[in-house]
Image: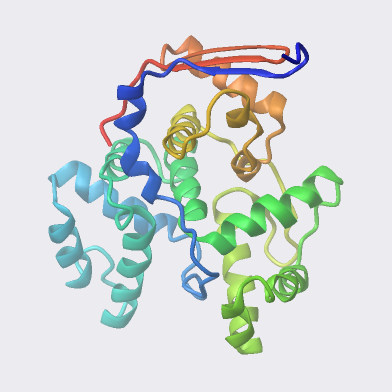
Length: 278
């Protein structure tokens, strides 16, 4: 036996992990999509929607009906209301677990731009769109690490061109579609706090709530990661975090008694204490 081999242990019981199984459906694993061509982050609209869920106890069907009738977004045309609902439904409802909706509804007790709401909304905005996930964890992350923080539409277009062989859908998009998509995703990332600036966008580290950390952790555990692999997951790059940043965040969750976490050298011990009802 190699004594230098990493020791990674996850003491979450099989029963606890099995309860997370619906979260396996959260991640978008399909080909790149142009679904985010025009609507961006929709932070204000999402906040209005989930505020109604919290304050009025509306079901998903009732939320949809209220949104489409114009009672939530009265300034938008019916076509735009339909597009808003379709975008928000894909991000926060279509994954098949109401844990996401309950978390976002609870977070509306604060403000739309508070880290609690914004970071959970951002997490699923990214996990539910493979293009956005890859763009942030590849292009944005590499720029951040190299301290080259300016990012432009041209950079995203180059990223799409490089990705087009692995993602055939990109080859079918017109130049105008690629440009609109690049503009919309960058605007969305700005609204979520990953970028700043209007014309000249620069990368910045977003403020991430413990709730968003816990949600990502549970998704990773549901997908079968354990121990050291959790810390090494590229998903944390959504937050522009290094492994040290991840360890600090998990230590904070441990202090909150949401998890048990110990990381010393090659040994990682991770146990869920707070078991979400997903």
